[in-house]
Image (cartoon, rainbow, N blue to C red; front, side):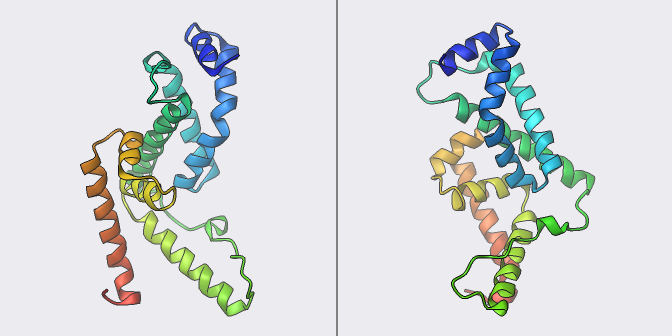
Length: 188
């Protein structure tokens, strides 16, 4: 059975079809949510919200469109849910102590000298902290551009906004990160 046939059955109310769609995309959406929330509990919340919104809006998904796959469609919903979740967290000021699980893992190196490991771990922690300080939308756009290597047009499609908005948000994110690192590296 093709994914489009499963989608049609899910639209008709088939619980088994819903389950198949969920199982087929659950892991990817969870990883996406975890990447932005950095918490398994929060990622589960985003995962649930994503599928609730997707199943409620399944009738709006155009399976015949060549521009969009179900995977991309639900991924976009997942990103929007992650942004909304991060905004709620920020507004509730739930950001508190850092868990040991949030610290970067020991980097692999051909030179496992302890001072190199400590230095690399500190640098990674600084970069993560700086990225976490960005507003949710800017952080996701920054990640899509520099971590996932998407171009501006692809980011605009995923974030459901204009290319000029992506460029503006990206420039603001880079500017904020540059300001954070100027004291350590000096002005360019």
